[in-house]
Image (tube, rainbow, N blue to C red; front, side, top):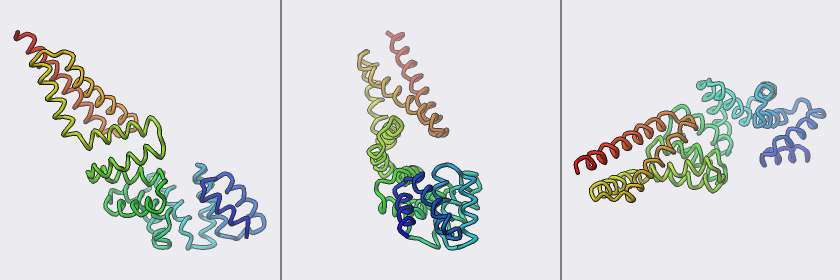
Length: 258
């Protein structure tokens, strides 16, 4: 069926509205084809029509239980509903059916990452990015997995890839954060040295550098809070405020001690 191949091709190219229109045309002539319902379910999910996607998934499985992409869609829907155990079951079922399919690897890796099975998630997401090096979601989830494993060099590498794939203020902020995390010891030591030199020798202009550095950390912490990364954001805010207070105390002590 040429139209079915075209619809599947549009789905693979992320042209979800176009794919859905084709599947709807196909359904009129072939109302019991499970692959049509599978394609419709995936398209509807990507178009954020989750209730309709769920209906198409159920109909597809009534016709054929061995449709890996249907289980992928169900895994994502249940993950959005915070029904983690059901989501894991669906993702695992998809993986059993089609362990080498990109969408399955990305889905199962994502669900395992949310489930805090980070090692297995990294394994699957690494395979996913090897299959599709330009997939932003896979790289984003892999970066988060590396961060949770405290593999900062690999996290930094993924953030650089993401900033190239999707240049934006958000990706730039995350890349700055990655720099800060990877070189945190060196940066902290440098700021302390500059701060002590500027205070001891009363070099007010040099004092701007550590103050600017701490200000950058504070900006990044606010960025993290905006991204709902509460723990990391609060930690950096406390670090920034504490450093500001230290600068003030030491500077006033030196000033009053003259």
